[in-house]
Length: 211
Image 1 (cartoon, rainbow, N blue to C red):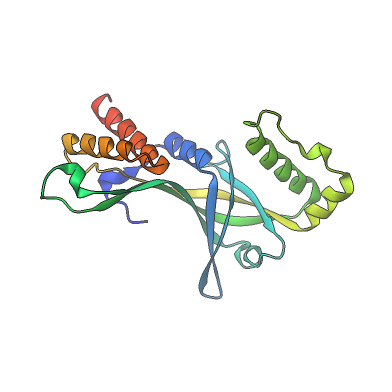
Image 2: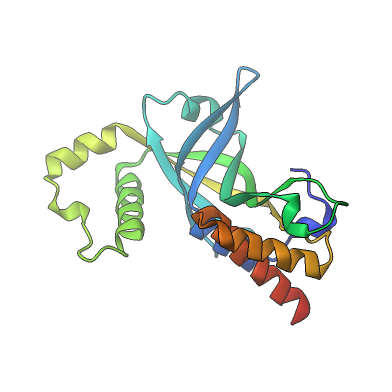
């Protein structure tokens, strides 16, 4: 990923927190010389290896797992993004741009087809995304025969991350006064993604002014 130094984020804890917050990722690999991608949730084990480990599963009919097994893949974690109008800068010296945050994780994909480990992956995925529900649902309510059928239809995998890239493109190349005007402009639109980018910008400004 192209990352100018002013937009680069290298703090592992910040990158990991972002990946957990925006865990519905795009898994990219190559198949016969062509890029191939699948959109799916990925869980992060922070303590495994220097950069962590990703765990997930996909439908067995999906051809990606066959071609990607044992090869280097890339997982893209997408954060909020927003169009930035030059009118917010209140100067004629600027042009439109787009602010966003993203993390790329790289590593070799290893398949997990053992039934016990597959069940652990499914259970963990459900528990992670159900924990915020008023009455969390559990796989334990599903008849065992149905669970066995489900497990036959999926393939699990893990990716030990060997490289992480983080890019927070949040107008860091502009003076503080302009950035604060952009924050106010984003907050005024009423759009959720704009508000999320404004919050990221506020956090970035705070980290620079209160190191």
